[in-house]
Image 1 (cartoon, rainbow, N blue to C red):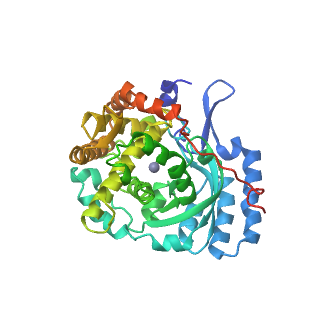
Image 2 (image 1 turned 60 degrees about the horizontal axis):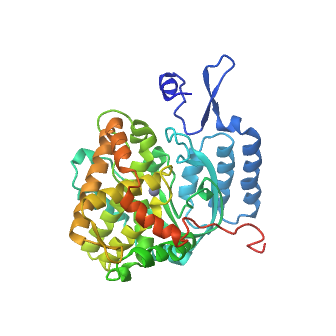
Image 3 (image 1 turned 120 degrees about the vertical axis):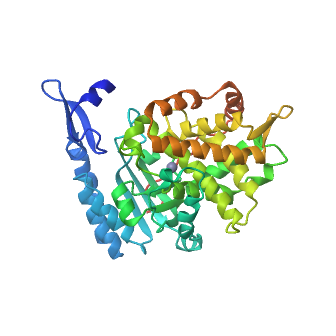
Length: 414
Ligand SMILES: [Zn+2]
């Protein structure tokens, strides 16, 4: 199928997250709902949450599991998403279904199935500061025209910390997910907000096994002490918070940003979340709400770019980080020590670049100009020779791109 054929087709649900596009008997395009395309699989999968209902002690969890089983077999997730947000006191949680659209490399429309089994760290979650109240105010402080941030955002921003005990499907493919902000359904988001889940054992593993070795190799000795787990955890957390800011719809009647920007929407949205997350950190730091050295956040953030560009250009996160590296490079946000081939941040330029890149992304999302964004991605989402040199050093040293989980019933000794 060519893109043109898809675009000119009048199939009503072609853009749906939950349909397969196939050819019918006469060669014409038809859509097949996931629950029909995968009838055997979803039937099997949906029995498992129902079995878990009998084991669950928490009433909210029981209700959610029942609704989720029904959602998996009908592709109608809304009621189960609502029930998921309503449950607050359960310690065990199961995120399951067709959820994220990163796997759709053509347009980013189609969701892929995945499953996490997670255990909430009740104490850690309790200790996470409640920043929700600040969000509307922070959002107003953004240096973009008002129309680019007009939508009201839920202040009910739940932040919780979990340990993951099982990953399957989309979240377990390629770069392992370390934080999630769900549900994705905009209607549910407007009605009830979202929940941000920090998957701290997975985050810690990436920090220890990947980020620290990268820092040892690439960060100038004068700034090496600024790499901290706390900063890594915070920037991951505020990335998720930032997904809830900005706008979901274009400002000129082109519908949602996701539909207008098609296959570039995810990369831009991830870039936005990274930049606005960092912006929030700076703002909260200026207000005295965050007390660690601001340079901890900056240096850890910058080093994490080297980690994430390694996900490659087929990943939305990889692309977002390539754009950012090149943008920061052009704006002198970091300087290379030609003797040691390590880099250090130039704080003044770094902050300027941060502002300008945030501005650009928010504007591009609001304008929903597909051609403009495709040009940006073409030019900027690339690994140029200067970055490649750094990356070669990392792979020569055998620093892993990813972590793999040993998981399952045996590992848990169940
Ligand atoms: Zn994200």
